Image (tube, rainbow, N blue to C red; front, top):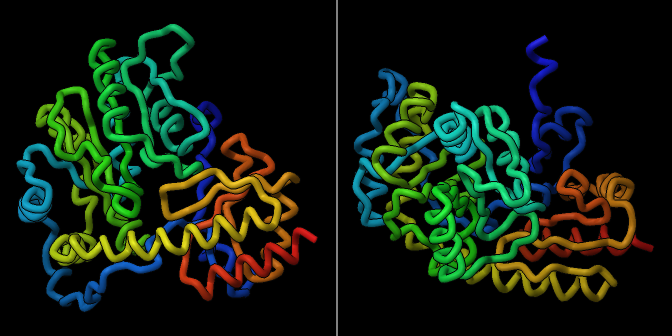
Length: 333
């Protein structure tokens, strides 16, 4: 009875592993939007990491993050991916009810997390308890400028709402538009190391907020949710954080190349500032996605975003991008 009352799981990309295991076939996964040019971080994990439980306060890790962003450890939360932090935020915010404003199309986990936390979607004219903004947005890739985000934050403050600002892709877009340097009791800013360092299997997210909210989120996440391998990798990755500028430069070049090629095929492309592109194919996306799989290419069917004729494709390396473009051209004939 309880399971019947729960909302269904949100749809996600990154299904390459599952497809390989089900079919035994290899595939290039354009459904997962990861950094194709990540800084080199050594993957040599000392066996001694397994000897102890992680420090559930993650003090050393938070001090490391704090030095990169000029923030205090008490302003930083960490979790098993950014989704865990979004879930914990919603448990904190909606445990006594309330509503959230979520502009669609956007990441499906927001609404699901609000519902699991006890909240609802705000009705027109209703003052919400929280507003969700993905910047740049998923799946459109549209980046909201910093001054506009500041206006949204002020509007939230006037309504007594908290802004959950998801910057999971901003490190591969334009960090200059971030509010990571903004201290405001009404702001909870979430990021993901998974995407910018291309380590989806490790699962590591982090967030910044008012110490009182961070403390609550930390209490609501599961104990030791950042495992020792993820913590070790994160400490090394943040020492190379400045090298993401090289990633951004290469992504911009490949994104422009892909966008021009997609437009040349007759697709309608949403101008993107992210490491992925949303394209309207002018036809039902499900059958097209299945045809692409026959060519060894997996893309994100955007039907679950309410965009039944659109696909989202990650920006990858030039040889991989050419394989996608070739397969797409063949499937559109």
